[in-house]
Length: 500
Ligand SMILES: Cc1cc2nc3c(=O)[nH]c(=O)nc-3n(C[C@H](O)[C@H](O)[C@H](O)COP(=O)(O)OP(=O)(O)OC[C@H]3O[C@@H](n4cnc5c(N)ncnc54)[C@H](O)[C@@H]3O)c2cc1C
Image 1 (cartoon, rainbow, N blue to C red):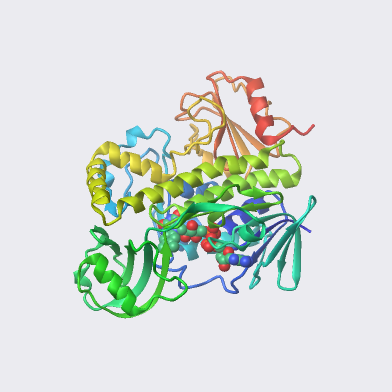
Image 2: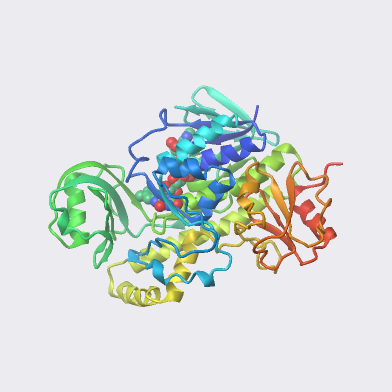
């Protein structure tokens, strides 16, 4: 019996598999598709924006350089100080100006990182390679069709084969079978529009403006890559998505949303999506958990889905590993839903807000005017950037201390060591900046779960010490002279009883 069976070898399932493998769990991943490669994952069609927070996660596990290389990005976005981002993206098709981001107003922004454009193939290949090195078994061409559980174990059935485990995680995407089979409630809102991604030969591309274009009848995107178009039509989700969109249909939509008579002479690949926004009411039913699109779906507006899923995998990974290994404090696994569900709900709302603003009616267009004015200001652009970069979210861990519950900035010690460099092995980290190394010896008994490092920091954010979860979230922050007992209570709360 495996410790964990993961259903779905998309980016979220693979990320989780790596986290569990790193912590020494036995993991089997079952993937429906026989081949990892697909034209939908490569180049423009598979293009995905990773937020600064997700990029930081790859850095923390030593995968950033392989990811950048696989993505064809040649410069490390790391910098010593917070710097103005090179790109900010758009809100509801209205482009944001990076020059308007007020970096000083974002004190907890990860100082070294900014978002990266990658594609699904690059992400999955880096994660697959790491998973294999960590002893994770990935079986392809295996579709899970039944899930049954009792108090001791859970069985995922695929074809004739039954795969027993102590836990099953469904990371099998937006149409998750695990979600249905395990009886999760999936609730939310129905679509306002149909979206399309298209690779086509455009007879007269000059008729389309480059970049994101919000028009009175929808939105279209023309990227620098030849023939790649994205478009949204506010049709109430009326397009029948069980059929492949034809060239005639796609051309008609493009003409309507662009207000031009542009011609698509050939369509090579096309798919459709909607802004249906749904989320399960919990991410756990007994021994079955959900992560990524299996737990929440929404439109790609705002580029959040993959980032959200990576956040789920990081949060769940160390908690499930601690549960499997037997040292998790009571209730630790349930904090997964408690912390991640509100972030997922926020992402759904972020996309709903954009869909509402893009409607072709006079009320929505009036709001567009207001938003254009707001994002024309420094405060407005900074607000949107902060939300999209993933640096502003904060879990409620019951502390007023401003760092607690946040994704830790990439703290630097005086000797140049970065927090991210200390996190490769998946343990938590206790950083003791205090002059007298007040916490020296107090992590004794937690060495296999917490790495203790002492030394002055270049920027300690006013704390004498911090305790950081394996996923990089600040669990506790001490005063200038940190209190040992408070540290030990925090360590016990999150990392269980110390080993004798
Ligand atoms: C056009 C578009 C643009 C996007 N852009 C961005 C972006 O810029 N930034 C961003 O963060 N997000 C973006 N997203 C969203 C992002 O792609 C998804 O949120 C992300 O891929 C979800 O990953 P996942 O691993 O949860 O699911 P998936 O990638 O869907 O992987 C699920 C896996 O499970 C497998 N599977 C399914 N059923 C079974 C079964 N029964 N048994 C076994 N295996 C099964 C599937 O074959 C698949 O490999 C975009 C989405 C679209 C459509």
